[in-house]
Image (tube, rainbow, N blue to C red; front, side):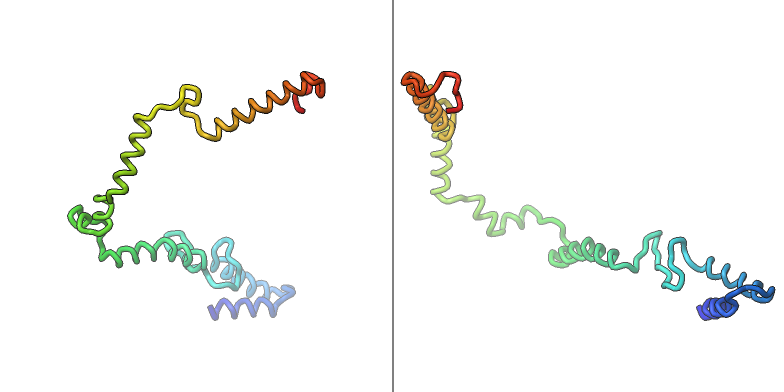
Length: 163
């Protein structure tokens, strides 16, 4: 690094390369500078560190390595190196006990829901339609009757459908 700096200083001292001695001194220094850096590297800046073609001395590399490497390592440390739980241990947990044996209220609610779906019959007119659809159809029917009355009274013409 000191040689490179000395050559650059020497080249700056011979700024107008008019003499043959300066030309000889400048030529080796410029070729040494050109060979010392990678394409796209700014001369005078530190050379980027590379590993298998990747630059690893950047903030982005540090951030993404933390994002993708640290959480799995913490998870493995928390679980003591295990990735899954055997069924025997799973059945001994409180969560499994709670979910496997629901209370009587839950069972009754499920039975009532099944009874309603399977055995309660709906009106032939409503079928399986929702309440909002039934209300919508009733509103449309009421508006149509209103419109028919207004046409009969002569307030609007039959072709004025928007009123």
